Image (cartoon, rainbow, N blue to C red; front, side, top):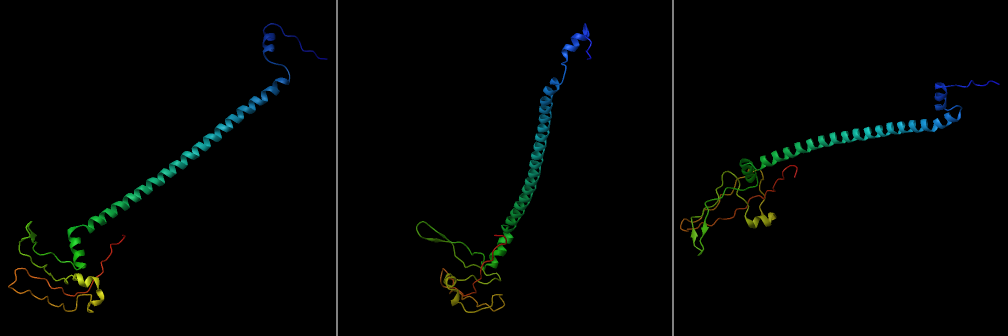
Length: 183
């Protein structure tokens, strides 16, 4: 039987502060387990949060690239619109469609009088536009070459005695309008 020596004074007071035996270690185990679980859970939460931030950063980068591409495409389309609406491009397209510049304008007064001398549209090397009757029935037109190499029928001139010349419709091939690319 070994008996522990009895402590006196300061040593006795310190010994009372520390519990003796295994019962104290059993109480310490749940606390250590709780601290380890809290630290592990905190690390896992930080990992998940970091992954979510990285995913958001990648998504933001993709959206910025997509925005840049769409902005570039919008600017290219705006340049195309500007090129098609330029006066020289409009004139060229109008000639391709068979349009010619109009003649001198005539104005009607409120009492029905005609002010000005009307003139027909000038043909400047382009085929004459189709008459309204010919547009509705393209099968009535005689077969002609569409490339303009066939001789054009000269327009009939109006008598010099009339004040208002009447245009005579000439049958020309009906051209189909071309569509602009991307529209």
